Image 1 (cartoon, rainbow, N blue to C red):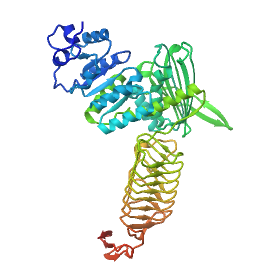
Image 2 (cartoon, rainbow, N blue to C red; image 1 turned 180 degrees about the vertical axis):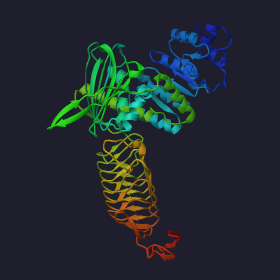
Image 3 (cartoon, rainbow, N blue to C red; image 1 turned 180 degrees about the horizontal axis):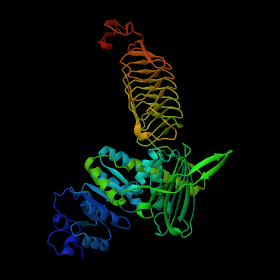
Length: 558
């Protein structure tokens, strides 16, 4: 019979089974930094987490309510502490991270308590059930400086990582269609339907491959074993880029199938996880030819893609340990988990209402700025106080916008763009990844930033994005083009329609195609009576600021 330990009040199964005078907690080396993970829940998936963390030398504690199950694990892992109370995990200073593998309805509460206790958190899919709770978990993890990782296992499968590399590198051409089948006979669930049990993995991979959220979703399914629990579902995802995807999941299927097909306009890829390792990822270089306006399919033999062999779950557990050590954001972080959760909830809504559902934009936690109802704000966007986001604008994930900015109609910013305080971006401007605007930058209507030097529609060059920096107070005139990889100096003035292909000095006035310097501008936005070269000095009649030209540069003298 289990008894309370007089030293630490833990459930003393280690002593009972091993007839040792010391409890499992006190028998551990307290300074062993490798043993820093507690696995919470040891059911169907938790036992696999325990096995892998133990194999990696990182398993400190197993927490399980079922005492009979806990005794079995204490016997299997005699060097690991076993407890039945989650509070014992939370108050242990030796435990740096927890891996939560309990039923989905408990994820939000357990993850929140762990973050508040100063632990890094790995939580099995889904992140939680409520988008509001998911957003709160992400915000809490950021505030407390904690790692929040979601167990989307396929992103740790070498074949999926290789497939992502092929897609991003343009090997498949322009992606047109993706479908995923995850089918089997059992394991039948009663706490969740097949959509929530099987589909999160496929949703996660599809969102990552196309690097965008769907615009709309249509799901339908059948409840055959239980009146209210779907046993099979088919989900259609529609993306703004034109890509279409479907996900077919079922636990009432005569044979096991785990297959992902990606159709590009150059090649097609098939990831079949039921095949032997050398055959798991294959490319089909089929070609569609047109003869007299009639499409003709020219089939080609499949080509195997070499993929290094590794157990995905072990790689996932190792990744969590690495993130704890390095403090880097996980590949499947809480924000990625929240995007998958948002899609899942839309799928469930469509399933219940039997109609197409438009995917809702992410809620932004702050309320001291204005976002028009037609604008779209994605996950992890920061918007400063007093900023206004107007009609039909779209802020992509990871973008930061400062205070008192005005973002006009039909503006796209992101992903991961930085816009400083007091900036004004007029209508129809796209600020792409790689562009940084310092404070008080003015972007005129329909001006253009580029971040790739040699774009092709069929070739993905996301790994070639170049950096563009626009310094404080610069003005970019209407319809001008700023070629990527350059710096626009402080208070520089780019004339309307100019095409800027090289760095622009502070206070310089440039016009034309390609842009050439024709003068100098003051902070106030008036042309200065200064030559292009030599040494000279003049005052701005509006502000009485004094400007000095020396060595081809203008500086402000207070």
